[in-house]
Amino acid sequence: MIVALFGATGMIGQGVLRECLLDSGVASVVSVGRSATGVSHPKLREIVHANLTDYTTLESQLSGFDACFFCLGISSAGLSEEQYTRVTFDITLCAAETLARLNPGMIFVYVSGQGTDSSEHGRTMWARVKGRTENALLRLPFKAAFMFRPGIIVPRFGARSRTALYRIPYALTRPLLPLLLRAFPNLVLTTDEIGRAMLLVVRYGAPKPILEIRDIRSLLTFHSVA
Image (cartoon, rainbow, N blue to C red; front, side):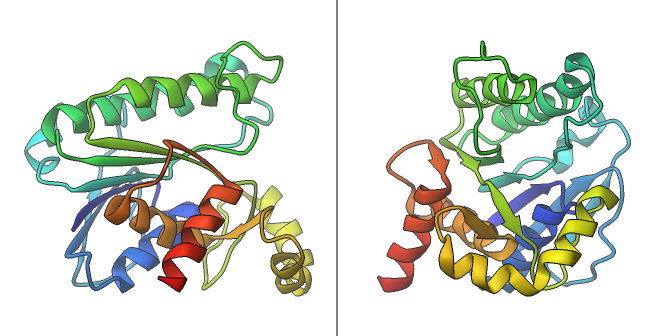
């Protein structure tokens, strides 16, 4: 399997990258982003690209993929709907449209969020924009597309948020994280679980394109038993 990974420097992306590099079925990973990951591995190739709304000069490097894991995203805190849309919708669709054209057999997996509004008309700004993004991705001519909607995310194995606002509560609650995972398995996912689940949907598919936390947990449980 050859994987394209967007957002590899973010907390979720770090976890997904780790799982891809550990997986013997992944032959290579190409990370695309504005900055390098700082990871050195024989299976990893990095493309540092400043303009994430224009891939014209990169098209020769963006074909031949079996899957794309799109983990790039930001918090909506302090942003207008226009600003949040530019990152969440515009950047995502620019990459996805290019990849769909160059890789018609690709499976595209997008990290969305719990509470996303598929109607696109709800009161919550971020949920509307995420819903619009999901709907647009599902219309593209990929072999398949899956929308992951995690809620509480526990960083593990060195994964770390780039946002200081998030790092503080993670540090304070770290001693409680094992308890949270045991007590609320359908509310909490770890960064490595998200990475493993992404690899599973590429290999085996899923019953539906939009996967809530419970669906992701069921996928992990089923394949660990199988």
